Length: 293
Image 1 (tube, rainbow, N blue to C red):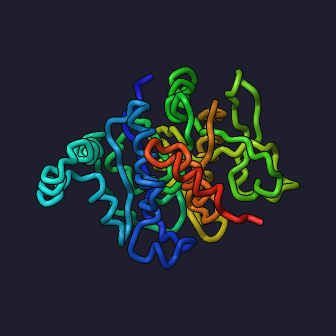
Image 2: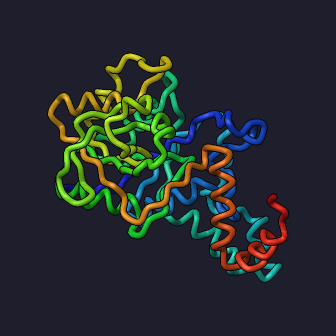
Image 3: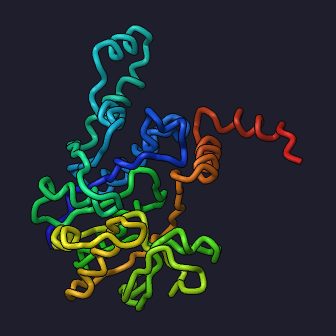
């Protein structure tokens, strides 16, 4: 099985849940302490062996390109004159992590459209997809765990996260499952955002995908469905009907951070601040002073 070396990161959404903050700044660039959300996504991909990062963007997304570009001369000089060589090395490292390719999204609204927009860059290879406004922290990295499943079984591999609260099942694509081995399941069907009483399990197949190139004709032939949108899950179900096996990899030691949601975003910032080597002590002491009655 040829190794997966390319990842697509859709980042073309409007970020309406964070307006007015996201009127001019991409939601993917919201900071988690001192790094934007999308950098966590890229770092996971790179740690898993990805060489080419294809970021699918829309209008008002230039900040993403600038972030992963080499620092300009003014910033370099400022950091050198200020004796901040470690910071300079860090911003250079960001640009050198991978080969970054940018594609503009075209087509109908929906989470399948940015994937189809990357077809000319991906070609006939299998590839990964990770959303740009959320991430999973795990050891080993989520995508690395998924690659091991892909290299053993092929087909489509989707990351799986258990949803313990029944009333949250309607936020995700929920899988009807058949066990294969520990933490690996064959997916019989994915139901997108089901009512809690109609959910076939509590495993959300969500957040990261390894897809074969057959996904592109499946996406092209789709008719808009729920909400008049083109859904990636609908194309995956087409592949399943064509006989391509679909697997869920339940992520081990994984914590899901839904940073596209205001409350969950704030929780993420606090949690990461408490783990930050330069902030954790002072920030922890500050939180203890708050009157939370």
